[in-house]
Image (cartoon, rainbow, N blue to C red; front, side):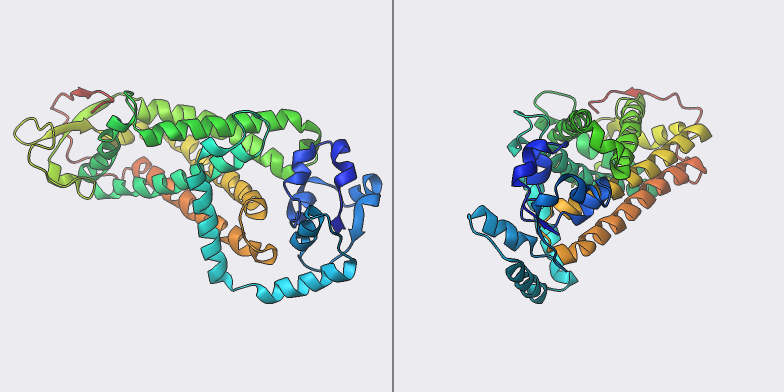
Length: 360
């Protein structure tokens, strides 16, 4: 159905923005997740313009925005024309990538939430960056299969970028990630409090809220154990750091005849995942993350990506495949260490470990 909800904006329980976000767009998937089938007839029957068989809501919205009006026949003609212009799934994936990249390059600093915390733009913009980070992080964790030399060099790569962190023991990527994560949490909590009535009737929102709270707890535990946890020193040669570093004469603070000290996060991983309960906690958290990302991506694909309405299933499928891969990558990390498959032969129990600081 095509609706002119102008007169209903002030009465909408979820606020005006929830409707305006979908002005001129196909809101079927989002609407059906939240509302019962008879809600329009009960509360907004006078908003119905007509029914269509496909998309072209965008054409109707464009006409409304310019002050014009479209008849039902004109809307149906728009549907036929739009269907004829749609490309294949390869084109859709390219549009999806460009749309995703546009959101990342837009940064969280160009959204409205610094003035209005209840605005949804910060929630979606931060979600795009968090998804990108989690994909990169999951792939980076696969370096654990290369052994302690490679994995510790991978960890040290981020330490070597601390000069970008404005004087903190962190690099600019970690600081931006923290800002995006905090923005995501605060906007989600704010919108939850504002739309409590709508959330009660929305299973997808309950899924996002409950899994999001669980992931917040997991993030705190994870940071405490790995990012802020005490690790021993691991002495490494610069040529072992490839592809993260190439040897440069005098380019490293070499100690002990050409070796430099780094945090032994490989050994720290073995110590953390030696506990079966910790492995179970991490595995459960990874599954919850997968549920959160799957549900959230579905909402993003339906609302925030510049993909034709009848090709959104391609965008949803791409995100779902990506979610499954990320979950499997993270689970492989836990299984590898938890089942004792990791290489610990390089550690001599007779040698006393030397603690390392977060800046090494």
